[in-house]
Image 1 (tube, rainbow, N blue to C red):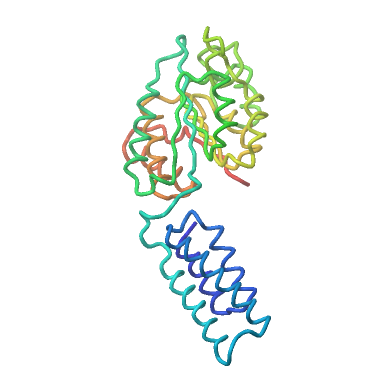
Image 2: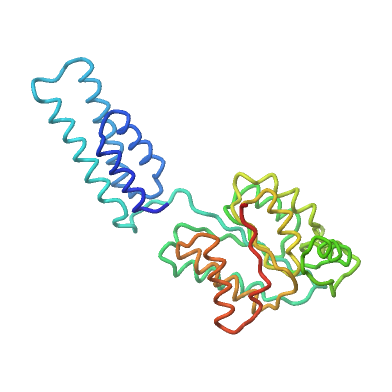
Length: 307
């Protein structure tokens, strides 16, 4: 939430300080608990209690002459000082609602070698260096099995799901893509298998391709909690489309993507996210980095956003 916009809204309500607007101020402050320091949160509780006592005394005519206005004025002064202090001493802010990012990596033995550990380590280093590091929690699951994938999403209730690994696009799915006006090429690997990300089977005996349809259907159960799905794997464009039917933002790759490009795009995207940028701008900045740095491949990632 933008602190400056929050303060402007609160000041506007305070300028029309009747009972209804004061109740709205306290409601907004209580809902913004994650932006308040411990001291500020305590002050909200104290001022709200004083306002309730003021209303009770006013209703029962317990005030002596002039006391009612003086007491009410002190409450307004307390609110004014509190609103002015919002955004200060951010190191004291208690972030009770961290944004959890689930990082899944899968590299079955028969798939091409991918530097998945490097991708995760670089993203985690960016988080640690960020001034907003305490706003995010990065959880990793390596050698991801189907059960790991499902259990972690249910348990963690993430804000974002990131998949790094291997993906393929079957001849059949490539044909469907071209029929729909999409420019994804024919697959060069595993042409008899359906399009899908590659996870470890639960018995650890090999890989298992998770299809477009299965991914789309599964993520439909998390439309109220997951904000973004990032498929940093080859040929994940169709999967992204299927998931986007339920999830607000989805990033996928239109075709095969080289390891260095995938890692640089991901780290540039997260650097912007950890810097406080919104998802669409972070995506554009990551594309811009690929172009400026000469890595190429800026035409491969695709962001599907709310229409």
